[in-house]
Image (cartoon, rainbow, N blue to C red; front, side, top):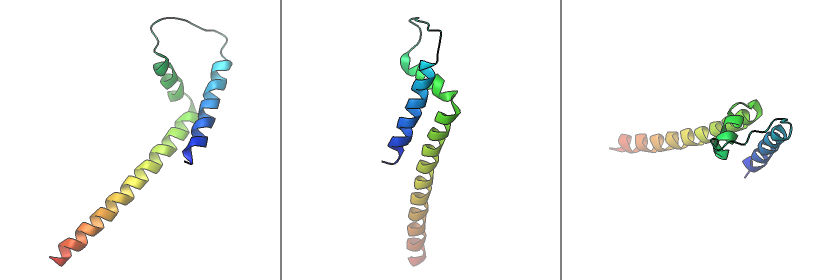
Length: 79
């Protein structure tokens, strides 16, 4: 898949962000997945990658819906 490299880059950027942190808190409240999601939500590079993937998916779904609508319209005309 073409998005795999982009995700790898995003995770590398996120990892670099972790490495640059000088203060580490170890409390039992933070779910690691939530922490990563929060960091990703505040990182423009990761947001950009996520939005590009979302945009690609939405375009594919729109194209599919347009094809289905076109076929349905042709069938309706034939009736």
